[in-house]
Amino acid sequence: MVEVFAVASGKGGTGKTTSTLALGMALADDYDVTVIDADTGMANLLFHTGLSDRETTLHEVLGGDEPVEAAIYERFGMDVIPCGTSLSGFREADPARLREVVATVAEQTDVILLDSAATLGSRSAVLPIVLADRVVIVVQPTIPAISDGLKVQEYATTYGTGIAGVLFNRVTQDEGIDRVSDKAQQYFEGEILASIPESEEVREARRASQPLLAYAPESEAARSYRNATDSLTVRDGEEGTVADRFRNAVIPEL
Image (cartoon, rainbow, N blue to C red; front, side, top):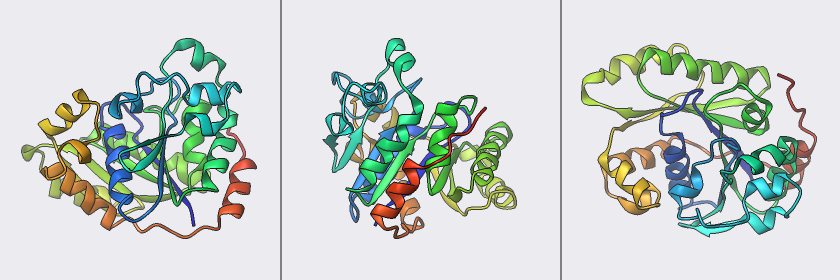
């Protein structure tokens, strides 16, 4: 079985990488999980997982210098493929090769999480959403953030990608989340998976180069992420068929 989720937001600062890793660790209790940092321009995942000193990353794979197996690292119960941060690596990376990366990984895991770029203004940013089976949309409970999240949904549905659900993240007590959530439910196709509170533990985990669920597993935010995965049913896809679909995916022209 295998299903691919893109974790996307449409804007920066929503906690997308934190959410990707938290969902990955929670799902890893029941599945083999691989997390891929598909944000080739502004990668962050390596800093959250203690991999900032690794020389082989997704950049080298997309540049044709290394096989995907060389960029896979076992971290916190998951396989992690970080992306580099150098400008030269970004320039040499061919986004189209992400299709083969996902196809190869799909043959050896149950769940793939693609940490997508914050904005949708390039082929490399949109491609994870096109490749995914479904998208988890991460938004803050504000009108601009919800508007950006709806743009992600529009891109996804245009290319036949489903909506797994919406995560409200970095929620503070004064934001009237129940009212916002009820309104958002009218516009988003997926269900509201969870509301994740603003948390100092998230910032501390980032400074410690650990995912939240490793650094503070009993925190309120960590429990909320686990509740989100309880609502996220993984669908069964046949590995070979899914891998072929990725290899033959049409890359959007923007």
